[in-house]
Image (cartoon, rainbow, N blue to C red; front, side, top):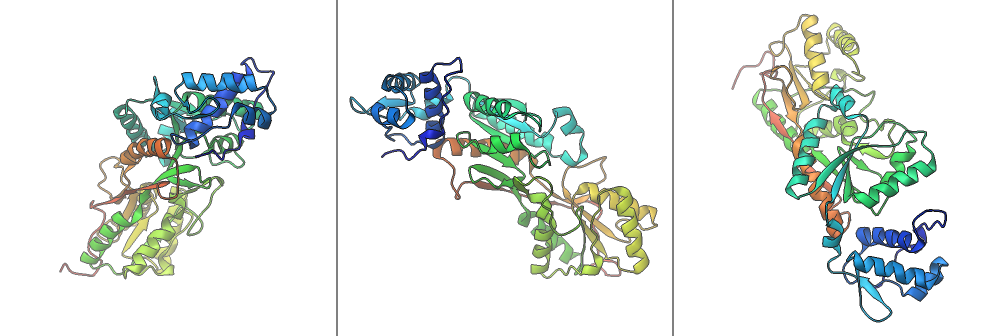
Length: 394
């Protein structure tokens, strides 16, 4: 089979210290790693030299370099094909998986909104070690980095990494360094917690349905037929400043409301609270609901942070949890042994799965059928959910 690559994407610069044939070998190597199946035919030296406007001897030397790297092999006196040993050659000798962080590692771990980052990273490292891969944590260039700096950064990634795992985005638009990395098609990439808009980047996200169905069963057992929803955002969904991917958490409320209503659990509009971005705003909004009489018997909260703010605010307003009102969170990472009822996200397994997905992209390429991997959520029966007020146990 012949290749259908755009060879003109290979950038050759006579001002660089590397000889042209070596630059060409690197460019062809990236195309082979990201697109080619064993047996794929490459153009003849005459064809490629005419296409790129370079000497045939340069192409022949580049092909010779790729033969040394075991990426291609001779099929006839004038033609080469991708080697059957291509994948093993690329992995040799000490391949690494890069972990792109949205900020400094210490700042990431200190951010309560990034509470799942640590178990995700543990999962990535453990999975990499199981596949005899090393890991390296990386930070993107600054937002105002020059195009040259961005190009050099992207090129360095393709030379030294098997692939990339992204831990969240930087919530900044435009983010030219991030966009350039995401558009580097020769480098397999996976995002955890969101679906990128570029079809060459995969994703590992949570499957809301599994944990919510368990919650629905518990709500029914406890005679709850209505529920209120508390969201961080001003509406049911929020794109946010990062326009390069769709965070699953920003659409969580809309998805979970539909799951609840489809199961017969009503979600009346009068109960819902939006824009719970701080404890003070949560307190003020709950106070208004109490005063208006629009308080449900149970609230599901956008995440565990909002749930804990709600519990603290309700206590301050003279209501007991769960005796007077129940509260359910979402994340599943316990804090101070508060025994919160919540939906647990599989942060560790999502990190672990991201490396397996990278290897799948590396071996077989990326397509719609393997681009997104879903990890099951689970219901944690804590002590902040009880039987509906004024209802008796069945």
